[in-house]
Amino acid sequence: MKSKRQVGGHVSASGGVELAIDRGAAIGGNCLQLFSGSPRVWARPELSKFDAKKITAKRAEKGIQSIITHSLYLVNLATEKPDLITKSMVALAFDLKFDAHIHGNGVVVHVGSHQGNGWDVVRERVRNAIAQLVEEAPEGATFLIENAASQKGKIGGNLEEIKWLINEIGTEKLGWCFDTCHAFTAGYSLGKTQHEGSAYTHTAAEEIERLGLWSTLKCVHVNDSRDPFASGRDRHANLGDGLIPPVDLEYFVNLPELEEVPLILEVPGIEQEGPDAENIKRLKKLAHIET
Ligand SMILES: [Zn+2]
Ligand SMILES: [Zn+2]
Image (cartoon, rainbow, N blue to C red):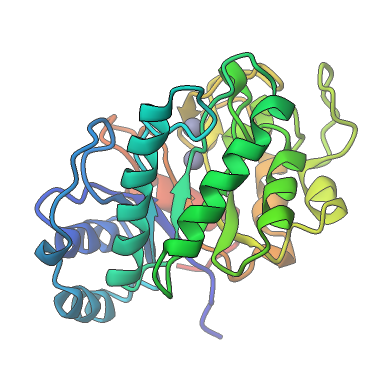
């Protein structure tokens, strides 16, 4: 039986989405993630530069099942600075239009940081911003909140925050993305291994189950961690080369709830050039995918 499972990596979209599809397929992926422009500048290309027909044809040719867009790193919907919120909203509105235009599978967003003010102080602001974005987004666009490592007041380290936003906003256009490195350093065990030093008593899977968050989980970033459990840090490692117990990562990616969810690598790569064939190979082995 042909596996329905999707594995892939974040690839460069330099030169266009078609080239990103070539790159994603060349490393052995059947799904991929990309940026719609540079993740470190606000400016975005014209939407008309992207030929949806060509992208769809290339995607079919290369067997790419999902294309996830990652929003830029400058976004902060929890800030007190109105101009930063405005810029963030403009950038995210573009990415949502881009997602719908290329028939993509969602825009992964680092929602931002409360910068020490606390979740309770910023949550309504964040909710209102996301609610407006999804309301105004075209049909077919999906906003995916990514869990964070909890560093520097980042929203979404605690999965309850994601649950609250999804519940409050309540639309099919909103889901979330789970990053294994972020969850591990935020203090969620990915498997059965008991670690010390976390505020959480549940494992990641137990917590997702308890919060009813499986059905809205649309993407998983499979990354190992250079930093220890509950360290609050965010530095990805190649699979098997970091501090996440391999048996826990294996347990997590084989949960039946993830069978049809794209598994996407955001690892440094053996040559430090991003997700590569070697990490795809490791991921397929981990996810029991025959090659
Ligand atoms: Zn991630
Ligand atoms: Zn990260």
